[in-house]
Image (cartoon, rainbow, N blue to C red; front, side):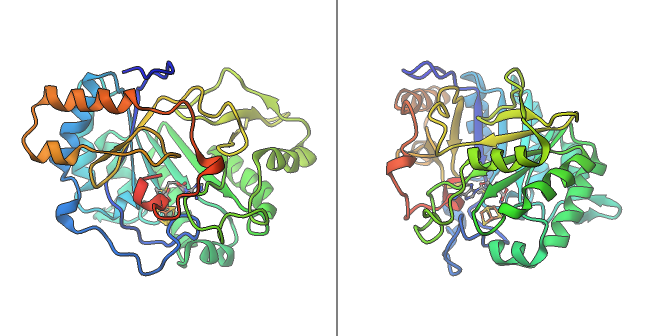
Length: 333
Ligand SMILES: C[S@@+](CC[C@H](N)C(=O)[O-])C[C@H]1O[C@@H](n2cnc3c(N)ncnc32)[C@H](O)[C@@H]1O
Ligand code: SF4
């Protein structure tokens, strides 16, 4: 699958739920969110069918996200079926980490079960090492639980564990260096992410936004000039640097300020309510659940995918387009 701008689509981000056990201000601003009814969510069978079709069209990497994907029942059995899909070579899960350490059978954590099911990489969100600030950001007191979750992920032996930190001025700008040390001590790949306007303007405004350039300056004032690692890439749009004198690398995801951000985009998103989104930062979405449930053949669904890719924008529209009515939790971050 290639779009008109030369983006080769090899990566499908699959949201399996709009529900979450946390309430991050920048993701789900309203406490009393109404969840989608169960029949409005793709079943696991439907989701697997769509992943299979995407794989036939060239997708090789899948990342499961949400909402909080680990809150959906049956996730381990679901992800365990993805490695059986021909051509899928990389499976990741993005999580807030709160449930990774939970024992799902005696002596076996969720993290270990996911690893055994074939998940290779785990992304854990962690914006601060300060438990009180964590509660302010997420609306929940799960900080210690997340740290236990990260330990469980390390014990489970994933190929890669990333920690994603959303940059917020006056909230966690004092946490950049502690988080770097935290990641260094555990051999985790830390990435700093610019706040994106998928929430309300109270959450993202000039006083809360912190650019990756600024974060880089803070890091460099402590460690010296970072060394660009142009050859190193994961599946996403992060740019990576090595910390001088260390083996540690850190990443920056400048969705708002990096004007080249979209050039290497290889992504398509499937929301839990069966919409294909060619770009996180645009209103465009296409309802594939309707033809799927109306009995479309695999060939027809393939055509649907190709039509969506055909409409993939050249770049996202975040810089001049707030999306207050569709929060990150509904899109699948
Ligand atoms: C929507 S969450 C879904 C997976 C999981 N619940 C988690 O928190 O990692 C995926 C990622 O999106 C990020 N995110 C949510 N809202 C965001 C925003 N407005 N700007 C930037 N990143 C955001 C979160 O920090 C998280 O790393
Ligand atoms: S960022 Fe993740 S943990 Fe936070 S509210 Fe959104 S889905 Fe939930």
